View: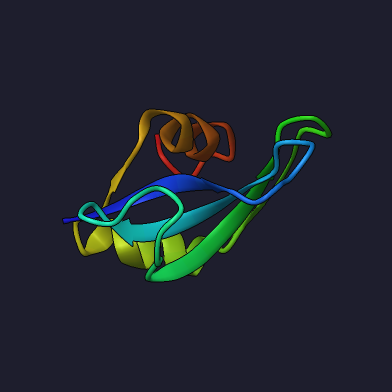
Length: 77
């Protein structure tokens, strides 16, 4: 099963990548594809909408936080 989840990439300040990853891999493990970027401090997001929609059509499940980000960007209704 594939999930859309956050992967931390900041050392001192938390910055996250939104990735499509197999649930059997750990949070910081190998991802299938990077589909976005989220900076909670500056409140910035970058989303690769076609890639996100592709994974959602294939049955990927977003985690709670990623689901909130996608709702705020009006990708999920």
